[in-house]
Length: 595
Image (cartoon, rainbow, N blue to C red; front, side, top):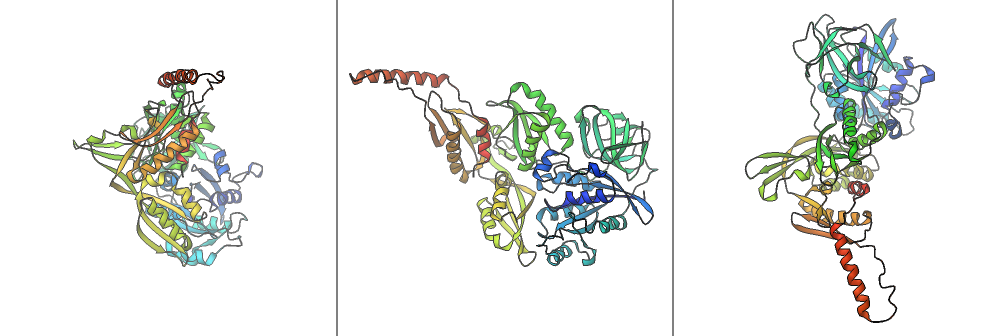
């Protein structure tokens, strides 16, 4: 156990975390040269295309230092605010962390929040200043920021370049010298934390774990504490680039267990594995349930695919424990699922993964957050979906979730960012100059306002320099209304939204204009209306495709033309009564892209 080091890398997006992991794997010769490729731990096509880490990965490296062999377990973490749950799981399984900061950009918001999470878990922090080979690096300024933030000595900060390999030897020796070995006892009853799981169609569910106490051997009878199920440990082993089976593993080891589990509901991330013969007294604590922030409906394009969609989402949930879902139905779209996500990027990634990994075509409804509705009878109802709202005359008040948002930016963009936040109903709480030209601005604002396009607007205002992080504050009273979209007097429930009253008129008008562009013309007029309750606030009409029925009249009496036009009018009226309007998939997506 003295020769084991478990660590993770925490950093903001694009600060060189995956590249640094590549260099560590190269230096310790974990990967043969012919198998090497850039971003080797990002094994999803989607991660490579977007250049972001979506899933945390674990890999074991062997490193010889001063004549001793050490096992270094790297548990990689994503950097985007939407995947902070992945980060919390990785941190729970480590004793130390490399804090990687870009020498050209300095400290960003996500770095700070992940750092606080690591400090809460008492991890040993090793600061690394990356991208020192860049011409626009500002090492002295960024070192000042790191010393202020972490409270370390200037000489403790490792100067490195993940691209050229500079400083990697020093990083490895500091990992061995500064990160403590795991504190546990191989003789104690078995206690292991599940921090991830994946589905293999041939072997069933493979759970990744870190042993906190005790020893596990191949063939042992084990029990999952939270679910209460018992299994045989058919195969255990450590995680190299591929799975490497072992006969036994001890406290401090990180590895995988295969026990032939087929049902995804039986494996919960954060659960504790113990031995049936000699069980531990209590489960490992400090692991929190995920709180989804954004809710949207996922519906199969073809109603027959409902069961396939369910099994696809269940398998995704194994690999991404922050996804939650419950079945629901919609008049417009049939049967589907109400899913909870950590943010909009998370929602987009789930859609992409359903398409790529499971070949599922899905329709996504307008995303919204969870509201609390207090009725006149004194009941409190959680509403995730606008169609679940009680009638207006039964509502006493509605409360919506508020967040504390922290934006770190260059001083020149502060004015525009403040205007953006105030337009989104935010109130300024604090403003701190971290250095001469870097400011941290703190706002309190409704979560529903950042769900749509806040992040994109923030990036475009600040030319990509502002970084954004948020955490949940509390529910507060809100003046919200339900905005419905009617097509020919029929409500399309998938397009309903709960929205702040002051924004409803403008948003309703823009929705109608957008739908007019997207809905194809029919043989009859289509009225598109936005309504709050019984009050219509906006209307657009898609004109009918008309045939020139008077073409065969040449000259003659006007009454002959009128007779033909009246006949056509009656036909259109009858058609309108029986005709139904197909809403194209782009219409649901276009609502998300309204500026």
